Amino acid sequence: MPFTIRNRRGLAFTLVVTCCTCLIIGIMLLRNNVAVHTNNLQIKAGPNLATTTIGTVNRGDRVQIITKKHQWAQVVYQHQKIGWVPNWLLTGHPHLKTAGPLAEATIVLDPGHGGSDSGALSNSNQPEKRYTLALAQQVAARLRAAGTNVIMVRDHDQTVALKRRPGFATKSQANLFVSFHFDSSTVSGSASGFTTYYYHPGHSKQLAQAVNQQLTGLGLENKGVQFGDYLVIRDTTVPAVLLEMGYINNQTDFQKIKSKAYQQKVATEVTAGLNHYLKTNY
Image (cartoon, one colour):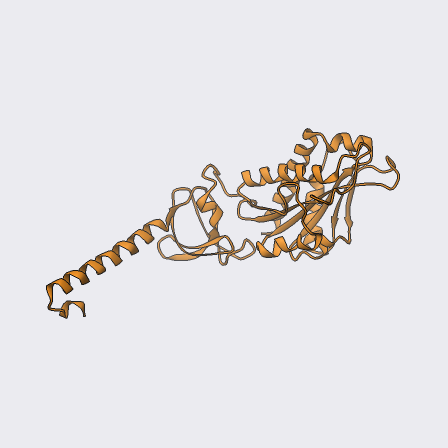
């Protein structure tokens, strides 16, 4: 026991160390004690949206962070209960009033092509890669406003190998994967419209249906939900869809594709489809 030391200097030193230790522990506890910014934040049994909901906390409640994993935080809530919440909702999004289905999800957005891979070309040689990125950024903005943890396969004009893209979902423990493209026909102007593709039956097909049902009033033919053998959705381990949102070498379609109004409407409706899928399945 430290108090058996008779030397006064030694005793004083022991007391100082003990006090410093208590101070450090107190600072750590205070730092890890955080206020919840949003209402209806679900407490999960594990560090992923797919696990069971075991409780909720609301704006003004306080939680104690124990540890972190996969961008989730294990916390003590209501003084003695333990569960997991998205760490991004504890450290950011102070203006998000209520956590909806999108708030606790991690979604990977894949703007097709990029860098040395231009993708298809319009009749005026405009590259597909430019518009897939513009559309994905519009979707990302809406998802982030809803509290979603968005992972972008690319956020500027860069080359990302095709085989690497599905790995973004695995690495980030994502819940959904969405790839953006624009179609092209062998004969310019011979095809028009947009299509929602899935590869795996079950959840991926359900996701494709949920998104496609929201794509209305775009001024182009909706070719519906179809099976597509594309690597980025075939090799993805989470529900995944690939959206071909118009034919870039059809002049009518291209006028839509390059229009910010079209991009914004598509982004709003894709976001609504993702929200509907998460609300139904989690």
